Length: 454
Image 1 (cartoon, helix red, strand yellow):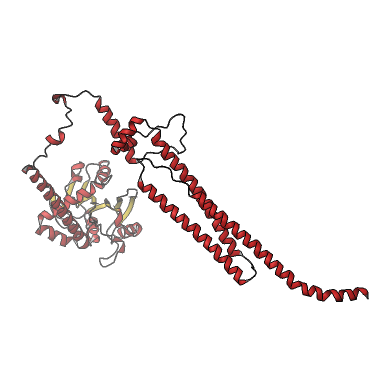
Image 2 (cartoon, rainbow, N blue to C red):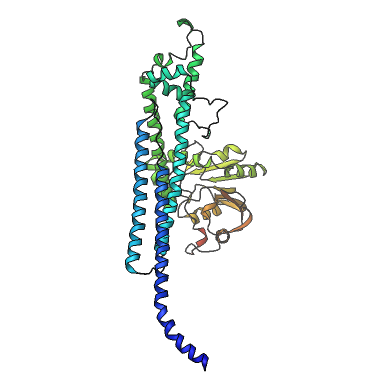
Protein backbone atom coordinates (compact mmCIF):
# COMPACT_ATOMS: atom_id res chain seq x y z
CA UNK A 1 0.00 0.00 0.00
CA UNK A 2 2.75 2.43 0.95
CA UNK A 3 4.61 1.72 -2.26
CA UNK A 4 1.55 2.44 -4.40
CA UNK A 5 0.96 5.77 -2.64
CA UNK A 6 4.56 6.83 -3.15
CA UNK A 7 4.45 5.97 -6.87
CA UNK A 8 1.22 7.92 -7.33
CA UNK A 9 2.79 10.96 -5.68
CA UNK A 10 6.00 10.76 -7.80
CA UNK A 11 4.21 10.33 -11.18
CA UNK A 12 3.00 13.95 -11.59
CA UNK A 13 6.41 15.24 -10.46
CA UNK A 14 8.18 13.20 -13.19
CA UNK A 15 5.69 14.39 -15.80
CA UNK A 16 6.37 18.00 -14.87
CA UNK A 17 10.18 17.52 -15.08
CA UNK A 18 10.24 15.93 -18.60
CA UNK A 19 9.87 19.12 -20.70
CA UNK A 20 12.57 20.82 -18.54
CA UNK A 21 15.00 17.94 -19.28
CA UNK A 22 14.26 17.99 -22.98
CA UNK A 23 14.86 21.75 -23.16
CA UNK A 24 18.17 21.42 -21.34
CA UNK A 25 19.27 18.71 -23.75
CA UNK A 26 18.49 20.81 -26.85
CA UNK A 27 20.28 23.83 -25.37
CA UNK A 28 23.35 21.71 -24.55
CA UNK A 29 23.39 20.24 -28.08
CA UNK A 30 23.07 23.66 -29.70
CA UNK A 31 25.90 25.00 -27.49
CA UNK A 32 28.14 22.08 -28.46
CA UNK A 33 27.40 22.59 -32.16
CA UNK A 34 28.00 26.31 -31.90
CA UNK A 35 31.36 25.62 -30.27
CA UNK A 36 32.28 23.17 -33.03
CA UNK A 37 31.29 25.67 -35.72
CA UNK A 38 33.38 28.40 -34.15
CA UNK A 39 36.31 26.01 -33.86
CA UNK A 40 35.97 25.07 -37.59
CA UNK A 41 35.90 28.73 -38.66
CA UNK A 42 39.01 29.37 -36.61
CA UNK A 43 40.85 26.50 -38.29
CA UNK A 44 39.78 27.76 -41.74
CA UNK A 45 41.10 31.22 -40.99
CA UNK A 46 44.35 29.77 -39.74
CA UNK A 47 44.73 27.74 -42.94
CA UNK A 48 44.03 30.86 -45.02
CA UNK A 49 46.79 32.67 -43.22
CA UNK A 50 49.18 29.71 -43.64
CA UNK A 51 48.45 29.36 -47.37
CA UNK A 52 49.40 32.99 -48.05
CA UNK A 53 53.17 33.15 -47.37
CA UNK A 54 55.19 36.27 -47.90
CA UNK A 55 56.42 36.61 -51.48
CA UNK A 56 60.23 36.45 -51.82
CA UNK A 57 62.08 39.28 -53.46
CA UNK A 58 62.02 38.66 -57.18
CA UNK A 59 65.23 38.50 -59.13
CA UNK A 60 65.88 40.89 -61.99
CA UNK A 61 65.64 38.07 -64.52
CA UNK A 62 62.37 36.60 -63.15
CA UNK A 63 59.36 36.45 -65.44
CA UNK A 64 56.29 38.63 -64.73
CA UNK A 65 53.88 36.08 -66.24
CA UNK A 66 54.54 33.56 -63.42
CA UNK A 67 53.72 36.18 -60.78
CA UNK A 68 50.44 37.00 -62.51
CA UNK A 69 49.50 33.30 -62.61
CA UNK A 70 50.35 32.86 -58.90
CA UNK A 71 48.25 35.89 -57.97
CA UNK A 72 45.30 34.48 -59.88
CA UNK A 73 45.67 31.16 -58.05
CA UNK A 74 45.74 32.94 -54.66
CA UNK A 75 42.61 34.96 -55.48
CA UNK A 76 40.78 31.78 -56.53
CA UNK A 77 41.80 30.03 -53.27
CA UNK A 78 40.63 33.00 -51.19
CA UNK A 79 37.28 32.97 -52.95
CA UNK A 80 36.98 29.20 -52.36
CA UNK A 81 37.65 29.56 -48.59
CA UNK A 82 35.30 32.51 -48.29
CA UNK A 83 32.47 30.68 -50.06
CA UNK A 84 32.99 27.60 -47.85
CA UNK A 85 32.90 29.68 -44.65
CA UNK A 86 29.78 31.58 -45.72
CA UNK A 87 28.03 28.27 -46.51
CA UNK A 88 28.87 26.96 -43.04
CA UNK A 89 27.55 30.10 -41.35
CA UNK A 90 24.31 30.13 -43.39
CA UNK A 91 23.67 26.48 -42.61
CA UNK A 92 24.17 27.12 -38.86
CA UNK A 93 21.73 30.04 -38.89
CA UNK A 94 19.11 27.99 -40.69
CA UNK A 95 19.47 25.14 -38.21
CA UNK A 96 19.10 27.54 -35.25
CA UNK A 97 15.95 29.07 -36.75
CA UNK A 98 14.36 25.70 -37.56
CA UNK A 99 14.84 24.35 -33.99
CA UNK A 100 16.67 21.31 -32.64
CA UNK A 101 18.85 19.75 -35.32
CA UNK A 102 18.05 16.32 -36.66
CA UNK A 103 20.31 14.51 -39.09
CA UNK A 104 23.03 17.01 -40.01
CA UNK A 105 24.34 15.11 -43.06
CA UNK A 106 24.55 18.22 -45.25
CA UNK A 107 26.59 20.07 -42.64
CA UNK A 108 28.98 17.14 -42.38
CA UNK A 109 29.42 17.11 -46.15
CA UNK A 110 30.30 20.83 -46.17
CA UNK A 111 32.79 20.28 -43.35
CA UNK A 112 34.42 17.41 -45.28
CA UNK A 113 34.69 19.58 -48.39
CA UNK A 114 36.32 22.36 -46.43
CA UNK A 115 38.83 19.98 -44.84
CA UNK A 116 39.73 18.46 -48.23
CA UNK A 117 40.17 21.90 -49.76
CA UNK A 118 42.35 22.95 -46.86
CA UNK A 119 44.57 19.87 -47.19
CA UNK A 120 44.82 20.32 -50.97
CA UNK A 121 45.64 24.00 -50.62
CA UNK A 122 48.33 23.26 -48.05
CA UNK A 123 49.97 20.65 -50.31
CA UNK A 124 49.86 22.98 -53.30
CA UNK A 125 51.34 25.79 -51.21
CA UNK A 126 54.25 23.58 -50.16
CA UNK A 127 54.91 22.57 -53.78
CA UNK A 128 54.89 26.20 -54.90
CA UNK A 129 57.39 27.07 -52.15
CA UNK A 130 59.72 24.31 -53.34
CA UNK A 131 59.50 25.49 -56.95
CA UNK A 132 60.30 29.05 -55.94
CA UNK A 133 63.33 27.91 -53.94
CA UNK A 134 64.62 25.91 -56.93
CA UNK A 135 64.08 28.84 -59.29
CA UNK A 136 65.87 31.18 -56.89
CA UNK A 137 68.78 28.79 -56.32
CA UNK A 138 69.44 28.03 -60.03
CA UNK A 139 70.64 31.50 -61.09
CA UNK A 140 72.46 32.07 -57.77
CA UNK A 141 74.70 29.03 -58.38
CA UNK A 142 76.03 30.51 -61.64
CA UNK A 143 79.34 32.46 -61.68
CA UNK A 144 79.23 36.21 -61.22
CA UNK A 145 80.66 37.07 -64.61
CA UNK A 146 77.92 35.10 -66.33
CA UNK A 147 75.24 36.98 -64.33
CA UNK A 148 76.60 40.29 -65.56
CA UNK A 149 76.64 39.11 -69.18
CA UNK A 150 73.18 37.56 -68.96
CA UNK A 151 71.61 40.69 -67.53
CA UNK A 152 72.93 42.69 -70.44
CA UNK A 153 72.08 40.14 -73.13
CA UNK A 154 69.10 37.86 -72.25
CA UNK A 155 69.19 36.21 -75.70
CA UNK A 156 72.68 34.89 -75.10
CA UNK A 157 71.60 33.53 -71.70
CA UNK A 158 68.66 31.68 -73.33
CA UNK A 159 70.85 30.16 -76.07
CA UNK A 160 73.38 29.05 -73.43
CA UNK A 161 70.58 27.50 -71.40
CA UNK A 162 69.33 25.52 -74.40
CA UNK A 163 72.81 24.44 -75.52
CA UNK A 164 74.42 23.58 -72.18
CA UNK A 165 72.05 23.49 -69.18
CA UNK A 166 73.57 24.62 -65.83
CA UNK A 167 75.21 21.81 -63.90
CA UNK A 168 74.38 21.69 -60.18
CA UNK A 169 77.25 22.04 -57.74
CA UNK A 170 78.43 18.87 -55.96
CA UNK A 171 77.41 20.22 -52.57
CA UNK A 172 73.81 21.04 -53.49
CA UNK A 173 71.22 18.39 -54.30
CA UNK A 174 68.67 19.24 -56.98
CA UNK A 175 65.10 18.40 -55.93
CA UNK A 176 63.90 18.29 -59.57
CA UNK A 177 64.01 15.04 -61.62
CA UNK A 178 66.51 14.75 -64.55
CA UNK A 179 65.45 17.06 -67.36
CA UNK A 180 64.68 15.39 -70.73
CA UNK A 181 65.50 17.38 -73.82
CA UNK A 182 62.78 18.27 -76.26
CA UNK A 183 63.16 17.67 -80.00
CA UNK A 184 64.05 21.27 -80.69
CA UNK A 185 66.67 21.37 -77.93
CA UNK A 186 68.25 18.15 -79.21
CA UNK A 187 68.51 19.60 -82.74
CA UNK A 188 70.10 22.79 -81.43
CA UNK A 189 72.64 20.76 -79.49
CA UNK A 190 73.56 18.73 -82.58
CA UNK A 191 73.99 21.93 -84.61
CA UNK A 192 76.28 23.40 -81.99
CA UNK A 193 78.39 20.23 -81.98
CA UNK A 194 78.81 20.43 -85.77
CA UNK A 195 79.78 24.08 -85.57
CA UNK A 196 82.33 23.28 -82.88
CA UNK A 197 83.89 20.58 -85.09
CA UNK A 198 84.03 22.87 -88.14
CA UNK A 199 85.91 25.49 -86.17
CA UNK A 200 88.98 23.30 -85.87
CA UNK A 201 89.02 22.07 -89.49
CA UNK A 202 91.76 23.56 -91.68
CA UNK A 203 90.39 25.80 -94.43
CA UNK A 204 90.44 24.19 -97.86
CA UNK A 205 91.67 26.07 -100.91
CA UNK A 206 89.12 26.72 -103.65
CA UNK A 207 90.84 24.24 -106.01
CA UNK A 208 90.47 21.33 -103.58
CA UNK A 209 86.77 21.82 -102.82
CA UNK A 210 84.81 18.59 -102.95
CA UNK A 211 83.20 17.83 -106.27
CA UNK A 212 79.85 17.09 -104.68
CA UNK A 213 79.15 20.70 -103.71
CA UNK A 214 78.75 22.32 -107.15
CA UNK A 215 76.72 19.45 -108.56
CA UNK A 216 73.44 21.25 -108.07
CA UNK A 217 74.71 24.24 -110.04
CA UNK A 218 76.47 22.33 -112.84
CA UNK A 219 73.83 19.65 -113.38
CA UNK A 220 71.58 20.62 -116.28
CA UNK A 221 68.73 18.49 -117.50
CA UNK A 222 69.27 17.25 -121.04
CA UNK A 223 67.05 18.86 -123.61
CA UNK A 224 64.50 16.48 -125.12
CA UNK A 225 65.88 15.29 -128.42
CA UNK A 226 63.63 14.63 -131.43
CA UNK A 227 64.80 11.00 -131.47
CA UNK A 228 63.30 10.37 -128.04
CA UNK A 229 59.96 11.81 -129.21
CA UNK A 230 60.02 9.58 -132.27
CA UNK A 231 60.88 6.52 -130.18
CA UNK A 232 58.00 7.24 -127.82
CA UNK A 233 55.65 7.70 -130.74
CA UNK A 234 56.74 4.42 -132.29
CA UNK A 235 56.33 2.58 -128.98
CA UNK A 236 52.84 4.04 -128.57
CA UNK A 237 51.88 3.05 -132.11
CA UNK A 238 53.22 -0.48 -131.56
CA UNK A 239 51.24 -0.78 -128.34
CA UNK A 240 48.04 0.42 -129.99
CA UNK A 241 48.58 -1.94 -132.95
CA UNK A 242 49.07 -4.86 -130.57
CA UNK A 243 45.84 -4.04 -128.78
CA UNK A 244 44.02 -3.79 -132.09
CA UNK A 245 45.41 -7.14 -133.26
CA UNK A 246 44.38 -8.84 -130.04
CA UNK A 247 40.85 -7.43 -130.39
CA UNK A 248 40.59 -8.69 -133.99
CA UNK A 249 41.93 -12.10 -132.92
CA UNK A 250 39.20 -12.42 -130.31
CA UNK A 251 36.58 -11.49 -132.89
CA UNK A 252 37.86 -14.00 -135.47
CA UNK A 253 38.13 -16.74 -132.86
CA UNK A 254 34.52 -16.17 -131.85
CA UNK A 255 33.39 -16.31 -135.50
CA UNK A 256 35.21 -19.61 -136.11
CA UNK A 257 33.63 -21.32 -133.10
CA UNK A 258 30.13 -19.93 -133.52
CA UNK A 259 29.57 -20.75 -137.23
CA UNK A 260 30.09 -23.60 -139.76
CA UNK A 261 33.37 -24.17 -141.56
CA UNK A 262 31.95 -22.91 -144.89
CA UNK A 263 31.32 -19.43 -143.36
CA UNK A 264 34.86 -19.37 -141.95
CA UNK A 265 36.29 -20.25 -145.37
CA UNK A 266 34.38 -17.37 -146.98
CA UNK A 267 35.62 -14.99 -144.28
CA UNK A 268 39.28 -15.81 -144.96
CA UNK A 269 38.85 -15.72 -148.72
CA UNK A 270 37.49 -12.17 -148.50
CA UNK A 271 40.23 -11.03 -146.10
CA UNK A 272 43.45 -13.09 -146.50
CA UNK A 273 45.28 -11.01 -143.86
CA UNK A 274 42.71 -12.02 -141.27
CA UNK A 275 43.96 -15.64 -141.30
CA UNK A 276 47.56 -14.48 -140.81
CA UNK A 277 46.46 -12.29 -137.89
CA UNK A 278 44.44 -15.15 -136.37
CA UNK A 279 47.29 -17.62 -136.71
CA UNK A 280 49.72 -15.17 -135.07
CA UNK A 281 47.41 -14.66 -132.11
CA UNK A 282 46.76 -18.41 -131.82
CA UNK A 283 50.48 -19.18 -131.72
CA UNK A 284 50.99 -16.52 -129.08
CA UNK A 285 48.43 -18.27 -126.86
CA UNK A 286 49.78 -21.79 -127.41
CA UNK A 287 53.39 -20.76 -126.70
CA UNK A 288 52.41 -20.17 -123.07
CA UNK A 289 51.51 -23.85 -122.61
CA UNK A 290 54.10 -26.14 -120.99
CA UNK A 291 53.70 -28.70 -123.82
CA UNK A 292 52.28 -28.18 -127.29
CA UNK A 293 49.99 -30.98 -128.54
CA UNK A 294 51.51 -31.01 -132.05
CA UNK A 295 54.89 -31.97 -130.54
CA UNK A 296 53.27 -34.83 -128.62
CA UNK A 297 51.56 -36.15 -131.77
CA UNK A 298 54.81 -35.89 -133.77
CA UNK A 299 56.61 -37.88 -131.07
CA UNK A 300 54.03 -40.68 -131.29
CA UNK A 301 54.17 -40.80 -135.09
CA UNK A 302 57.95 -40.97 -135.14
CA UNK A 303 57.69 -44.29 -133.33
CA UNK A 304 55.58 -45.72 -136.19
CA UNK A 305 56.70 -46.74 -139.69
CA UNK A 306 57.63 -43.88 -141.98
CA UNK A 307 55.60 -45.45 -144.82
CA UNK A 308 52.28 -44.44 -143.23
CA UNK A 309 50.41 -41.66 -145.05
CA UNK A 310 49.15 -38.87 -142.80
CA UNK A 311 46.34 -36.36 -143.40
CA UNK A 312 46.61 -33.23 -141.22
CA UNK A 313 43.20 -31.47 -140.91
CA UNK A 314 43.83 -27.83 -139.89
CA UNK A 315 47.60 -27.88 -140.35
CA UNK A 316 48.30 -24.13 -139.87
CA UNK A 317 51.99 -23.58 -140.64
CA UNK A 318 52.70 -27.31 -141.43
CA UNK A 319 54.66 -27.89 -138.22
CA UNK A 320 53.66 -31.56 -138.09
CA UNK A 321 54.81 -32.20 -141.68
CA UNK A 322 58.17 -30.61 -140.83
CA UNK A 323 58.62 -32.79 -137.72
CA UNK A 324 58.14 -36.31 -139.18
CA UNK A 325 59.46 -38.32 -142.13
CA UNK A 326 56.03 -39.51 -143.30
CA UNK A 327 54.25 -38.07 -146.30
CA UNK A 328 51.64 -35.60 -145.02
CA UNK A 329 48.60 -34.06 -146.76
CA UNK A 330 48.06 -30.61 -145.25
CA UNK A 331 44.59 -29.00 -145.30
CA UNK A 332 43.43 -25.65 -143.95
CA UNK A 333 41.07 -22.71 -144.64
CA UNK A 334 43.96 -20.49 -145.83
CA UNK A 335 47.56 -21.03 -146.85
CA UNK A 336 50.62 -20.04 -144.86
CA UNK A 337 52.92 -22.58 -146.59
CA UNK A 338 53.19 -23.90 -150.18
CA UNK A 339 52.40 -27.43 -148.92
CA UNK A 340 48.92 -26.37 -147.68
CA UNK A 341 45.83 -27.30 -149.68
CA UNK A 342 43.14 -24.64 -149.11
CA UNK A 343 39.72 -26.27 -148.67
CA UNK A 344 36.83 -26.87 -146.34
CA UNK A 345 37.81 -29.69 -143.97
CA UNK A 346 34.37 -31.22 -144.37
CA UNK A 347 35.25 -31.86 -148.06
CA UNK A 348 38.94 -32.63 -148.65
CA UNK A 349 40.27 -33.59 -152.11
CA UNK A 350 41.28 -37.17 -151.22
CA UNK A 351 40.06 -40.56 -152.41
CA UNK A 352 38.22 -42.98 -150.13
CA UNK A 353 40.39 -45.12 -147.87
CA UNK A 354 43.62 -43.47 -149.05
CA UNK A 355 45.40 -42.50 -145.79
CA UNK A 356 46.64 -44.38 -142.72
CA UNK A 357 46.51 -41.63 -140.10
CA UNK A 358 44.12 -38.63 -139.73
CA UNK A 359 45.07 -35.85 -137.30
CA UNK A 360 42.87 -33.11 -135.75
CA UNK A 361 45.19 -30.97 -133.63
CA UNK A 362 43.12 -28.16 -132.03
CA UNK A 363 41.09 -27.95 -135.24
CA UNK A 364 37.62 -29.28 -134.29
CA UNK A 365 36.22 -25.76 -134.65
CA UNK A 366 32.83 -24.68 -135.88
CA UNK A 367 29.38 -26.11 -135.40
CA UNK A 368 29.78 -29.02 -137.89
CA UNK A 369 32.28 -31.24 -136.03
CA UNK A 370 30.32 -34.31 -137.12
CA UNK A 371 31.07 -33.53 -140.80
CA UNK A 372 34.82 -33.40 -140.04
CA UNK A 373 34.82 -36.82 -138.33
CA UNK A 374 32.71 -38.43 -141.07
CA UNK A 375 35.13 -37.06 -143.69
CA UNK A 376 38.05 -38.54 -141.72
CA UNK A 377 36.22 -41.91 -141.66
CA UNK A 378 35.81 -41.70 -145.43
CA UNK A 379 39.50 -41.10 -146.25
CA UNK A 380 40.93 -43.54 -143.66
CA UNK A 381 41.77 -47.11 -144.51
CA UNK A 382 40.11 -49.89 -142.47
CA UNK A 383 41.99 -50.10 -139.16
CA UNK A 384 43.37 -46.61 -139.75
CA UNK A 385 44.33 -44.33 -136.83
CA UNK A 386 42.48 -41.15 -135.84
CA UNK A 387 44.32 -38.80 -133.45
CA UNK A 388 42.40 -35.93 -131.76
CA UNK A 389 43.89 -33.23 -129.50
CA UNK A 390 41.56 -30.58 -128.05
CA UNK A 391 41.51 -27.97 -125.30
CA UNK A 392 40.40 -29.58 -122.02
CA UNK A 393 37.98 -26.78 -121.12
CA UNK A 394 35.78 -27.57 -124.14
CA UNK A 395 34.64 -30.95 -122.78
CA UNK A 396 31.66 -31.02 -120.46
CA UNK A 397 31.54 -34.84 -120.38
CA UNK A 398 34.35 -36.89 -121.95
CA UNK A 399 32.31 -40.12 -121.91
CA UNK A 400 29.51 -38.69 -124.04
CA UNK A 401 32.08 -37.39 -126.54
CA UNK A 402 33.76 -40.79 -126.81
CA UNK A 403 30.37 -42.52 -127.17
CA UNK A 404 29.38 -40.17 -130.01
CA UNK A 405 32.68 -40.79 -131.86
CA UNK A 406 32.27 -44.58 -131.59
CA UNK A 407 28.86 -44.27 -133.28
CA UNK A 408 30.62 -42.75 -136.29
CA UNK A 409 32.59 -45.96 -136.95
CA UNK A 410 35.55 -45.69 -134.50
CA UNK A 411 36.84 -47.53 -131.45
CA UNK A 412 38.70 -45.91 -128.54
CA UNK A 413 42.30 -47.16 -128.25
CA UNK A 414 43.76 -44.77 -125.67
CA UNK A 415 43.08 -41.47 -123.95
CA UNK A 416 45.39 -39.11 -122.07
CA UNK A 417 43.68 -36.70 -119.64
CA UNK A 418 46.75 -35.87 -117.56
CA UNK A 419 47.67 -32.61 -119.27
CA UNK A 420 46.18 -29.44 -117.76
CA UNK A 421 45.66 -27.69 -121.12
CA UNK A 422 44.57 -30.34 -123.63
CA UNK A 423 43.26 -33.93 -123.88
CA UNK A 424 44.62 -36.48 -126.34
CA UNK A 425 42.57 -39.38 -127.82
CA UNK A 426 43.45 -42.25 -130.21
CA UNK A 427 40.70 -44.01 -132.21
CA UNK A 428 40.76 -46.91 -134.67
CA UNK A 429 38.45 -47.11 -137.66
CA UNK A 430 36.10 -50.11 -137.39
CA UNK A 431 33.87 -49.36 -140.37
CA UNK A 432 31.39 -46.84 -141.76
CA UNK A 433 29.18 -44.76 -139.39
CA UNK A 434 26.52 -46.79 -137.60
CA UNK A 435 23.95 -43.95 -137.48
CA UNK A 436 22.20 -42.06 -140.25
CA UNK A 437 22.96 -38.47 -141.18
CA UNK A 438 19.80 -37.23 -139.47
CA UNK A 439 20.60 -38.82 -136.09
CA UNK A 440 21.56 -36.32 -133.41
CA UNK A 441 24.79 -36.80 -131.44
CA UNK A 442 24.76 -34.49 -128.42
CA UNK A 443 28.24 -35.55 -127.31
CA UNK A 444 29.84 -33.78 -130.30
CA UNK A 445 28.69 -30.32 -129.12
CA UNK A 446 31.82 -28.94 -127.54
CA UNK A 447 32.14 -25.62 -125.71
CA UNK A 448 33.68 -22.75 -127.70
CA UNK A 449 37.21 -21.79 -126.73
CA UNK A 450 36.86 -18.03 -126.20
CA UNK A 451 39.63 -15.75 -124.94
CA UNK A 452 38.96 -13.01 -122.42
CA UNK A 453 40.06 -9.44 -122.84
CA UNK A 454 43.21 -8.57 -120.84
